[in-house]
Length: 198
Image (tube, rainbow, N blue to C red):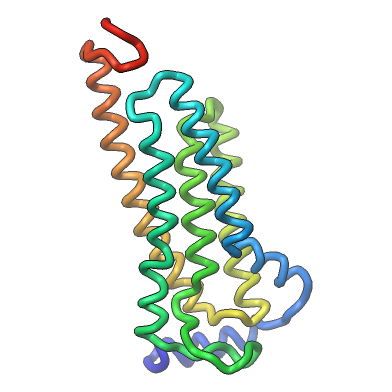
């Protein structure tokens, strides 16, 4: 990512966007592991507690799957950073390894996975819409903060959003299949551990 037709456009966009300030710093900090991962942990604990309380088979599966996905982020991002070896913007000290953005990927998976797991537990369409808007706002805010502060080039952020979309889609498909299979077994009369014989 140090050369190519998009790099010139990326650098031009970065020059137009970079205006460091307290707001951009605050938004960028929402992508820190110390902020995003505890939010995910609270959501996972609540989701697993709710599923266990209502007697869902494999109540632990959504939480464990999302936690494993979060653990996968550095496993994927760090080798990509080493492979591309992209230098940072002029606003940061000279270094390489900025592509893709680890903060953006962390925010995308933490806030995105929390949203995917909480959505089925919300009863009203309004609450589900509000959660989706909050998730989108958090992720857009992180991306804007990182580029506005000059911590990352715009393409660093975009690459991590693409990676996050792929990983969250995989989580959604996996959980959708597992949970629908579990509900089909229950509706067919197969007893769950918690409900006893039908």
